[in-house]
Image 1 (cartoon, rainbow, N blue to C red):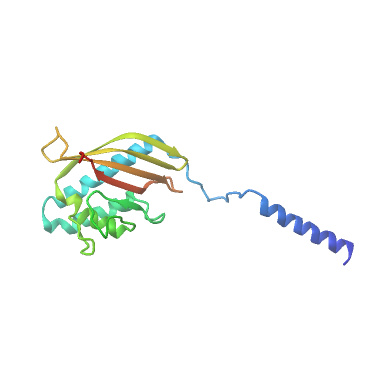
Image 2 (cartoon, one colour):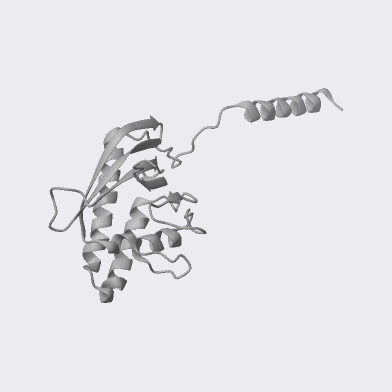
Length: 196
């Protein structure tokens, strides 16, 4: 092998080795998600509450309004949850085996509007005339584009603004996607424990 060829081959291999160990460089248009803020977490929790109320209002206690409520619920889930990012770890408040945990949009939609006989749900958003939802976090932890929070969610029904009809314990994990949209990727909800 001639010296010039050997030098060119060595230079090529050296260049490949450097490329393999160099840190990845973002290409133009490959925007990494920005850090999520506490204000964005609280806004997303508030938007979740307004979304639940919007389903209840669309239903208005009438079974003939189910198609409209289902359309509102589907749009709400698309806005609030990160099913476009992968499975959402969703454990709603009132579920039973074998569908305690929901990883798909179909499972979430059934929980909110009782539209899928496979799940045997009551349609949580349809159960009461929900009119206000208040999230009271006990803490928020931020890790880059991901934030975790837990606390209580107070649900108020129409005509009863002084006392919540239901209080549930809620844990959410939010992720800001590459378009800057904050989405729920983990949702765990349970009724408060009152002792044995």
